[in-house]
Image 1 (tube, one colour):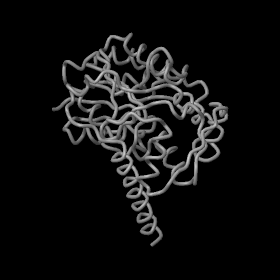
Image 2: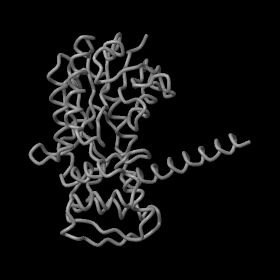
Image 3: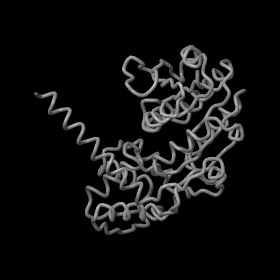
Length: 308
């Protein structure tokens, strides 16, 4: 029997794609969810909640490696919730004797982190305080259909004739394609040299947020004029994003706070461990648009069949 891998957050954006990739690689996958009876994703659905220690002991029984993909992005007390969940999971992983835990965190220099990114680093620290070695991957914006950050970009590009951006829209970031995030996550599950290490992951392009918007618009074949307003504060920016997109205000505020921090890769060690050229931004954007179109086409076809 192959290695048994547990994916927390298996019903989420990253978790659902990761579970499928692991199954294709031949791993025995368990998708942890609070509602296993509703789980229809790859692998075996198992019940588990990071705020219920007893459920974690059951979910982790017989597991070799676990991916920790849990976070409370839209909750006002996300930092406290995420810290408590990480502590419970680290303790349960130690009791179960796991070989390693893999955690997907946020990219950014330690000295100037937003509350959201500070929370992600605190989760790293808490997981590492346990008995199980932790491999950390740090990423900035993930470009793929279903990503909240990408969905904001797509909606702004598709719905607006022009954008008004604050000064921090010139902050630099290093977006990464969903396919490359999954490739790196799968790539660190087995190598001994990945245990206990931190890797920064990103695509080949370092862009300002305004560049991301305008390049995505160019892929769509439309102009997207931009007006920068220096006095547009993060709080006002979040309210504006919540107004022009379907992202709720709490999530918008958390994401905007994170966008004020430079998020670029300084250590390229992952490229030695998991070789391969990452996808460029424009190609990642085209893939995300195509995946969304395919999903919507499939949904419409299913509804037509259901009506008949």
